[in-house]
Image (cartoon, rainbow, N blue to C red; front, top):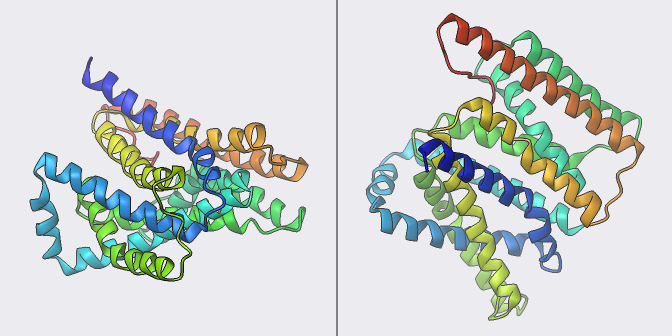
Length: 302
């Protein structure tokens, strides 16, 4: 198997796991989202520690621990991704996987907006159109449906800000995930002890316990697979696959979990889809033109 084929399978596997998260966390809806989060952090930390040990890469973690600025950046990113995780778990638990999927559809557009506002990146015409369509879709949800999509917005902006910070941190994926987990581990362990002291924890030698451990493993595995795949796949392929996970989450919410998907939601999603089509189409066209001019790689799809 070639590196490209193997990387394609790794990326596909990562997006399929993310796309099936709604089904997985639906099995844990009887457990508070914060408790699921603590186990996601603890067992992801354990799993990544095993990976670092087997790959003999603990020196990367030790080197990073000597960089206060890097640790501060990773602490900020860890808080953002923890917020993203707990809101997603909570939304699936209350039967709103559809709303959560909207957040992940919006996140690439939020990433572009943050790049423009924070990093002062130049906005291209097709990006302006894509962002405008997204704004129209969210605005319609707010004014026509008289409902602010808080879940989607929190998921989109927490993930977008997380990506913004990680883009500026000089650390590889495995080391970064390990340090993010370690930085939040004391809080998770204290919360676990508090739950145990009050007799409120759900972890045991049972199916719930197995699922809670699996939550940590399923957090780390797709991230590691994606990081490995990204070294060999073009950003165009990764950009297309980016929409696979939220699409699966949406389909899961509607057709398996039986969540409503009425007229207002269809209109909102329609504008978001249109924005993503413009974004992808514009990026592909730009890559084609750049390829003719010298074979530069696409930089717009994140």
